[in-house]
View 1 (tube, rainbow, N blue to C red):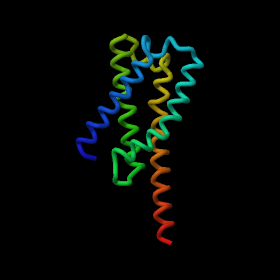
View 2: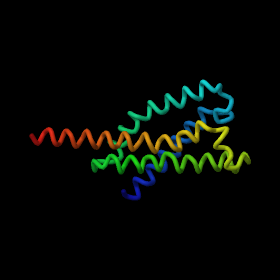
View 3: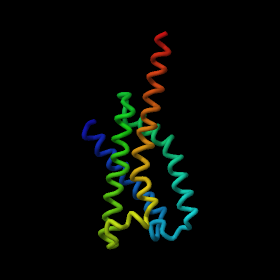
View 4: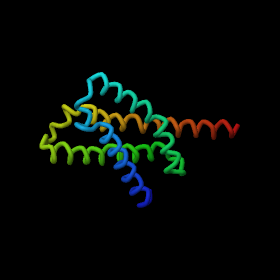
Length: 136
């Protein structure tokens, strides 16, 4: 992956974090009801299936969907964790313990590492099957 793609993904991750932060104002979703946080987790998980597929097609043309999905998972978890850590642990003084009351953020630090590679694997498998089917 070239340097330009790394910077694009870093910008993508920051914009993603900023949008989620702004939606969650004033207290980064803490003021929301528990059921609303669950609904958002389900909604974001579901909406990220087509978004992941679109992103993998838009950013990469090499057909290595599984590998590229891992890059995407890295850029949508590690930088977001760093942004959350700086905001909640450092600025708000919560320390690393923020991962408990802000469990819905913690959920995505891990779920994207399952979800994105699953989408990448499925896309790569589908592509391989269509190539094999056209060979017959």
